[in-house]
Amino acid sequence: MDRYTTLVIVLGTIVSGAMNSILTKYQDMQCIRHCSDPFRAVYFDQPILQTLQMFVGEMFCWIPILISKQIHSRSRINESVRLVDEDEVMSDKPKWKRSTALAIPAVCDLLATTLMNFGLLYTPVSIYQMTRGSVILIVGLMSVIFLKKRITKLEWISLFVVFLGVFLVGLSGYLEDKKSFKILTTGKDSFDVIIGMFLIFCGITITAVQFVIEEHLLANFKVEPIEVVGYQGFYGALITFHVMIFGKLLYGKGYFDIDQSFEDMFMNKTVFYTSIMIMFSISLFNFCGITLTKILSATSRSTIDTSRTLLVWMISLFVGWEKFHNLQLLAFSFLVAGTLAFNGVIQPESWSIIPEWLKDLELEVPM
Image 1: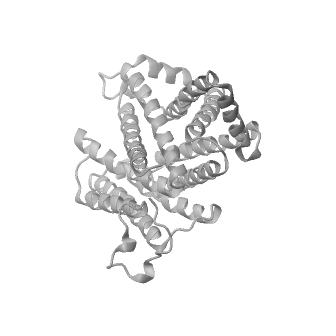
Image 2 (image 1 turned 30 degrees about the horizontal axis):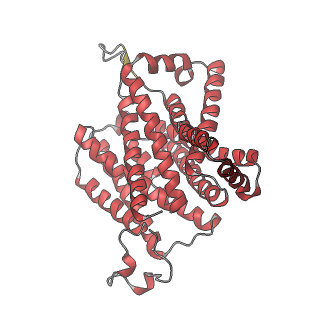
Image 3 (image 1 turned 120 degrees about the vertical axis):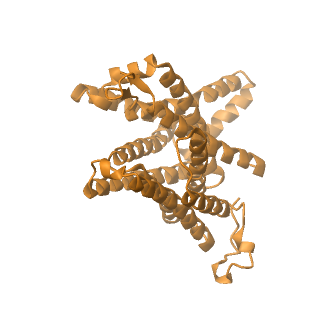
């Protein structure tokens, strides 16, 4: 894949990921009942339904897959036979084993999303952001251990620079919340925050496992990234829907009141239209993300994915959801510089100011 195509995939990952975050936040802000009374107003707060939306969006990837198969089935017979043969060669594994293997990332995605959402209930969003940023370091470590990747000294430094940028973003939010006494009014004590951080860390660890497994599958299976996303959406939606049904039968209130959840989504036009846009944005985001895993690596994907925080911040400033802070500007400078360095857009290996003992010139610099 040429450099320009890679650039398009990178931009697609950042833009679609940022839009998904913005649309989800905007959806959460929508009042659905008793809107005229600020004390009784009910807002759209349905994280489980939003998880289902995510997986349904990923299932949209089956549309071009099925269309492509239909087109090929009407083409020349020998071409169709060749495609079938390639599909069966796939590491000499039967289709049911491939399907089962592709279900593993979906389970990881579901568990990670659930743990991080629950962790967010116990922690301020600033601490959530700081904790979640460590995913790039965990992905890098797992890639070295399980995928036998070699990451140079300067690449490790780049990852730590990206992590520092994310940490400073969260620190800025923490200081602002503390200044405005928001943290003091959340009702959470230090033990709650520790529990929340532990849940978030477990969630991002599972996310790192998901990225590494996807890279392994793409390297050992003759399967296209769009098909991986399709399977992930199918299995994820199936599991999430069954969880919602069991939750309804066992508890039936709050997040598990699926009747009320779907009514809130379909009866409010703004929520409904944003749900459609969220589904399409998450579909594009996951396709671009897994494509990055295939053409670059899971570690590159995690650094590029983290960079969407910059675009989210800029959009939030524009619409008035955030206030400008100098510390955040410094943080995003670290974030961008580390991402560009790790992915080879800028190449510190060639800089004369970098000590020779930090350089590893015999290794190929990543794209």
